[in-house]
Length: 63
Image (cartoon, rainbow, N blue to C red; front, side):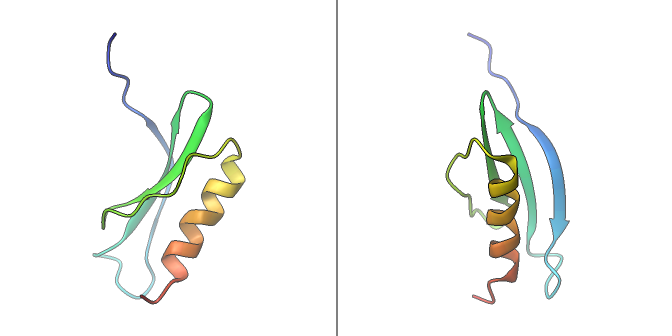
């Protein structure tokens, strides 16, 4: 079975340290999840909106 690369549907740099965090919302099959260049990732969601909120919450987290 061929590996499919996920498609990024949006990216946003972190406001306080844009070089450290870059999030994207990725789709795999019927699931969407947020991931960040720092290694963080959210659980798979069926809702694109919820995945986008996960990414926004990660960027807003000062820690």
